[in-house]
Image (cartoon, rainbow, N blue to C red; front, side, top):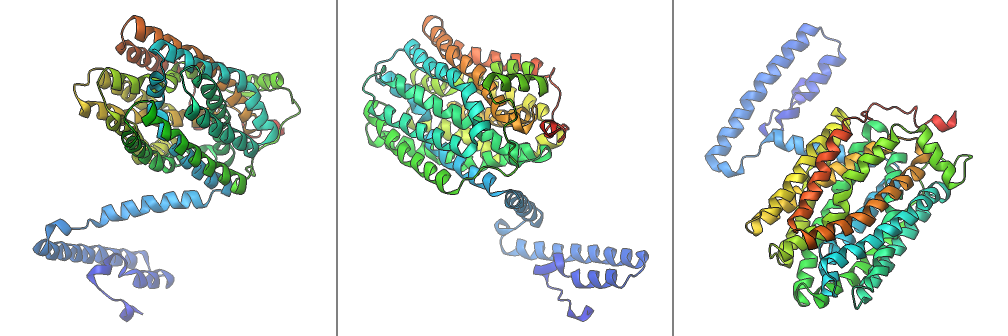
Length: 486
């Protein structure tokens, strides 16, 4: 059997494999096996040195590091293995989020400029967005209750349909007042989708792999979202620049992409197998009491969310406006900022997810929040377009922290209460979304635009000590999942 081994430099990592199997199968002594491994390592080193010497004589630029190749291949294979072992619902939801994010990122960085082009002032811009927060407050608890009552599939169908309707109303708006219904409808869509989406990971993934799964989903969805702002910038430039006529075509394209998402959900998405059914408490307020009773420090987590979520509502409104109005950024710089913000999740989501599953969610969030604050400081003092783009890239760390926070949120209550739990959070987030844009608009108009960025930084700095008082959820086992079954 030993004579069948081929010692070729190109196949040296596995050249001793048949011999190794023969030694082990024959039950040889440990000392003999140790001798075999020593000889194997010596041979591999010699072959590696010969290969590198020969390659250096030909072309040093073509040197291929075997360790790096194996590492990349193993990372890809681990990601593929992680996805393939999950149920179909998780996979379809990843694709749904990817298409949805592409549609969202087509217009996100231009919406505030579009509303301003329709005649709104910075303060009126805040008022318009506050109507969205009001809609979020009104829909939060019913949405969370309906997720538990009617399932994820129906919620996704409703939310995606509302998203398409909101884009249509944006496209047809002729003045800033006409944008208000579009904002309300779009917010209702986001509230439905944001409530249902985490419930997919909460139902399909275990605690030990939840952060990795969520960050992997974020990685997959970041790829199309990275391209969307650049496509949007080209379209805006083609149709007249950053004005009403230049931005309006983006909303029509957004409708087409959303319809693809709707078709995917309609034909392929099914409710998770592990999804728990609604408990005996079937009314909305009874569900709230169940969450408060069975969850872990939910009141303190709600307070933390109210602080940390402020940039979620202000970044898409005032950061592009600040870059355009104060720093004179054009459509390509704005598109570059939005694309740059997706680079960090694209490259780091999986490593950060694994890190969160290893060292804990809180430690990862401690790292991401200061980096996001730094990005706002860079934008405030940016001397040129390059600094603005750097700021955009670092803003992607907010997404990493937010996704990690979503994993922690899902671990605070039993699976059967996830819909109502996200509904409660949506209620308070809606209140923040209602008042934060108006408050920021007042700061912009009466004090200074840069102080809006300072306000966003302050909310992050205040969130850190509050987070330190909340217990780590990584080691919370399935006893929380099974609470309602007892």
